[in-house]
Image (cartoon, rainbow over all chains, first blue to last red; front, side):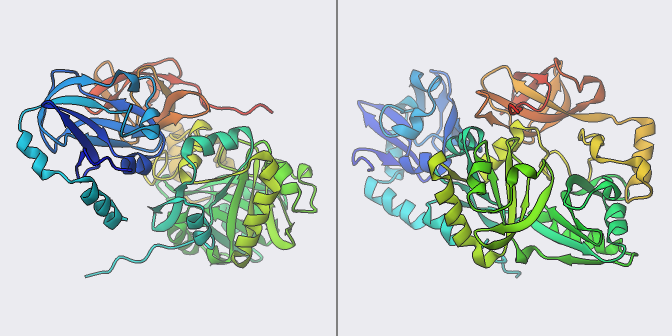
Length: 127
Length: 367
C-alpha cells in the first residue's frame, strides 16, 4: 500500500526524491480521512516552502485541510491535472495525483521523515 | 480535573460501525458523518432514497390541560392553529428575541404536544420550557425513548410503504400518523431536513436494528443508501434550511434569519414577542442571504464577506452543492445588500474571492 521508496510526514504527506527533486503528495490514509476531495489549492511554481509550513490546501466536501511541506525548497511544478479533477486525489494519491514538485534546499530534512513501515505503524497507532 | 464525559451513542451505533461509517464527535454524540462518501449519499437522496439515523435529536413532550397554552407561550408559531396530527416548524426564543432553538411541534392531541429539538440544545430547551411553565402542564425530556430515522428522497414513500399499513400518500406534508412500522409502534411524520420528499419516524430504541434492516431490504430495489451527517448538511444547505449554531443562535432573531413566517405576532403573548415587536417597528439591520461562488474557492463557515473591499458580514454555512455543481453558501449582510444580484467577495485564506448573492432555496425539488 505505502511505497517503500517514499518518505512520510506525521501530517500525512509523502515525498519521493529523484535527482534532487522531491515529488510531494498526500497519503492514501489522508485521502480516506478527508473523503470526497473537491478542490486543491497549490502554490505557484517558484514559491519557496519550508518544512512543516503550509504549502497549500485540500478541500473535501466537509472541510478544508492544510497540506504541510514535508521538506523545504522551491516549487518547480504543480500537478496541472488536479485543477479540473481534484477527485483524482481520492483515486490515486500515491501516483497520478501528486501535488507539487520541489527542488530540495535541505536534503538532510529527509532524516526527519518516516519510512513506509514506520508510517504504517504510525497510522495504526493513531486509530 | 474534570474527566471528559464519554460520547453518547444512538441505539444503532454498532450498525454504523459495522457498515464502516466514519464516526465523529458531533456535539457530544458519536455519529456517522459518512459511509460511502458525502457526494454519493447526497445524490442518493436527491435521486432515489437515503436513510439517516438522527436519534441524537431530542424529544420534549408537553402534556396536560393547558399544554397548548404552554406550547404557544414558549414558541413563535401558532400552536392554537395546529390540528391534531399536524406539525409545524417553530422557534423557541429568549426574551431578547434570539433563538434558544429551532424546533418541530407535533400536535398529538389537545393535551399532548411532541417537540423535536436539536441534539445539543435539548437540555437547555427543556430547562427553558420548564422555566416558563406557569400553566397546568407537564414537561418531559423523553429523548431516550425514541430512535429517529429520516427516510428521504423521491423513493422514500415507496420504501416505507412496504413496511406500514398506513396509506402514506394520505399523510400531507407536515402532518403525521401514529401507526406501526414493521409491527413496531411508530410516529410517522411527513417531514424532513433535505429539501426532498420523505418521512421521519420515531420508534422504540430496542427495535432500531430490526427496523433499520427492514428499511434497507425494502429500499434495495431503489439502491437505498445509509447517509451520514455530512450529506445531511449539504442537503439542508441546498434547501437553504437553517442549522442552529450557524444561521441561528442566541444573537439572531427570526426576522434576521428570514424566518418571519414562523413568527405569529398577533397570536398573543409569547416569550420574545416584545423584542420582536420593536424589531418589526425599527426594522432589522442584517439579513440572511444566499450566495454562489463566481470563482474557484469554496466559502466556509465563519469566513468574512466583503463588499467593495470592506467587511460587510460573515458566512454562516458554505459548501459545495453536489446536486447543483456549484459552491454555495449563506451569509449575513447589511439589509440594504441582502437581495439577489449583489456582487460580494468571500475572504478565503486571506484572498477575496468573487461571489454573487442569489435567491434561496438553491435547490427546489420538482413536485
